[in-house]
Image (cartoon, rainbow, N blue to C red; front, top):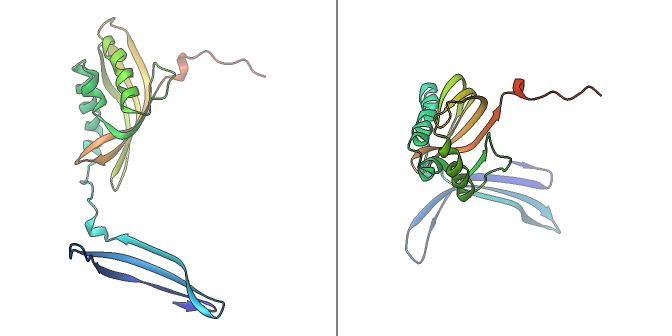
Length: 188
């Protein structure tokens, strides 16, 4: 493509690496501008061929829903390490019974060290699934029975999953008590 004072070239190129002789194929885009009497590169983009990028396994709506039960089964072990390993390397947990956002493995593990002492077991009451290439989301309402006390806690949830290291992991988990149980603010 070309226009008045600019040109664009896009395609595929291959490099041979001198040290190893390995070949690397990539996509490229060069944007040129005519400046000070000569053509100069104003933008260059190069990216690995998509065929070389590992893709997530396709996942059905039911399989997304079943990911909850992998997490819930991890809770049933009462082992915070088993639960924390269900989360992605870069995950965010906004838990039901803590004011602290959990954004590292250690913080997520810390939360479940306390939460598993309550002996929680959950059931999904309502599930709404969205999915795309390499991600899935399940949002709805769940209810926990706390084995330690027998209390029941109903909450809204969102689980965002990513395909990482060959399996689906939780990248974002938000859980909040149902608003009907929260005292309402007075009108202003």
